[in-house]
Image (cartoon, rainbow, N blue to C red; front, side, top):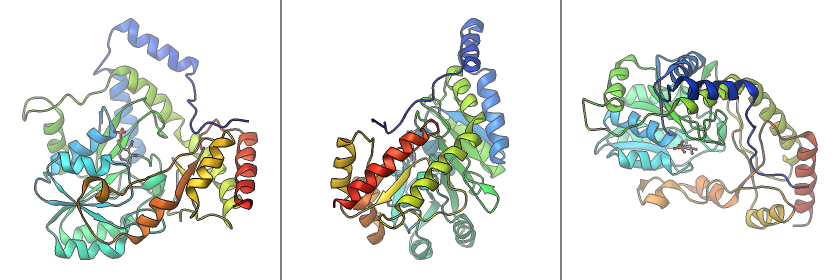
Length: 347
Ligand SMILES: Cc1ncc(COP(=O)(O)O)c(C=O)c1O
């Protein structure tokens, strides 16, 4: 049996009709699907305003420009996709990299020291793999030290903690709708704004006119695909969580698991093992798609200032991911579990 790491869900009849309608009406951009997506996503999150853009990286960049981080520190976790740190650099900010804890999100123990000792403009927590960062603690410290909070929610559509969704905790949040994301458009992103004061600032960055700007828009086709994906999100998340629960039960005594915080939406299902590279090789030989998230730490990648990062360094060397997506069948999950248990036995 072969189990791919990711499988596209396919396009249903209703979505095909919508895509055809876009072609027939000739309204290819700035039309009703984009407006509808922004409205539904805003209501889903419970924020003040949502604006779609062409990628998650763009969303981070626009949000950072809106709060003007030029020559100021922005706190980021060591373990994330490179866009988290690159957006800070592109916006003229200085990344300050902290360690992560067993949830693979920002280590709160280092945060107060960072805020005390550095001229920080914003904290950029990442809800890694779909698991919530410690937002109550982050918001409390942000308030105490007068800094902005921008959530990187690129992997966390629908995750929540204490009844508040990822993207509705900070002043702003960035989402990605890249092809494999839990809400997908192929490519795409959104800035979600909770702080009403920042709405006009983000508009000034995104709309042509006020300052020199890139074109950050996406097309109606992407919005239509995203809208259908958004409407299936809750059902798809339940399926992802059911698969994660089976994996957790099967692997908890053998592998390191990510400690959950709140409602984890399992964009990525990860495990830890000191012999990660060998396991990855064996899984590939058995036809099971697997990936290493992440083989780098952000301060190593871009040579930025950082605190000591012992946890992130261990995770970088030990983490690997298994297939997890709504169309994964029970037989495929059985095969992944049986195969990985067999591999672990032979180590
Ligand atoms: C944590 C994180 N931040 C930012 C991004 C950037 O999103 P995009 O690929 O849509 O630019 C991604 C996704 O790829 C991500 O996983």
